[in-house]
Image 1 (spheres, helix red, strand yellow):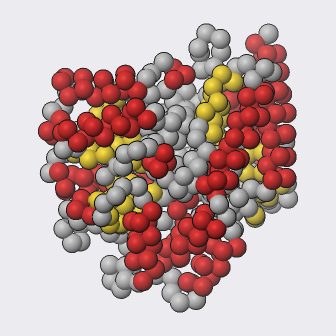
Image 2 (tube, helix red, strand yellow):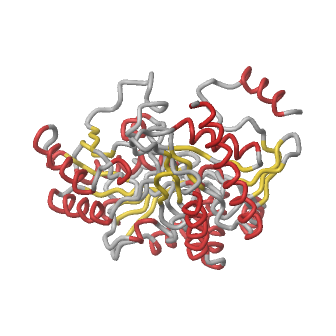
Image 3 (tube, rainbow, N blue to C red):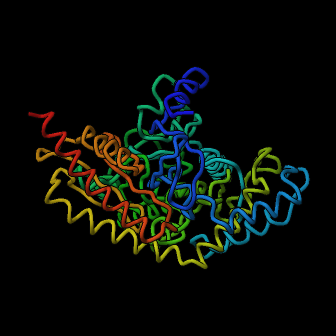
Length: 430
């Protein structure tokens, strides 16, 4: 069937609330390439929103899942546990930042990991309040929405949100917000709205994802750690999008000289299979009573098998180093294009978690131009995603395993798309 025919069926059968970014329907994919229902090939710079860092259908991941499914696909770990759940917990506990004993929990989605991290923090501290950041994204469940610092489209029409969640600005150099501003806002919050003795946790993304790919400055991370230590607050790093080699380290927190108390993980953890995790200090993770954590599908053995293979691929194929290489090449190409597209005012991001923000000379965000770039790229066979509070940021999330020749082709398409989009924007302005 054509994409248009499938789109009509989709509109008749599926809730309008489940939005889509592109009009194409995927039929198969391999590494960084994807084919639609009409046989057209695309280079995938979305990767399922940073889910397939190891590429679509990596053979080692696929083989690991096939081997597991020959044994069993589900028992529910709380009913009949299995060894690979324990093995993955041991490996993540050892790999996660922090020189202290750790324990892990496996669930299914990033939002579920965040929900459980908040539960664990409240159980350990016996406090209720949580501080998050404007622009942050932490999921679409109710606590996830409450923590998320963006109303449209995530919170609109769903209120009221869970209480005792407070937001402060996140540093964004392009918009004049510094780490010092953010830390001062927390101190002001303690004076005007919430007693720090009631705060269970501060949650943040080491690089904001949906918010616009703003990296957390080292000053912010050190400052958060100091505030948390001073007031007995837990620090939660949401690494759902930043984890598993995307930023050039296994975890984005490895770029800093401090460790969080809890880390949430999902997306590329299992290379496309539903799996998420919370890893943290052993004494904190043990705070909930037996039965207080878990879930029917949490730590599904197929996802666990995939995750063990993903960790091996990241190590054996040097994906952290490759992320640095590819990200450097991408940023270099984008920088060279700034003379032709001066509205591409800021290029940023660690490793291969790179974004370009479109702003005019007066500092006004340009979401229409960002969307035009995305549309022009799609016409040419390159899938891109936008993000940001203003929708004016293009984010680049290709699989880290992308072949050199496919990556070079994508960069050429990107250059053509940027030029074409700007030309259209100038004509529309005239």
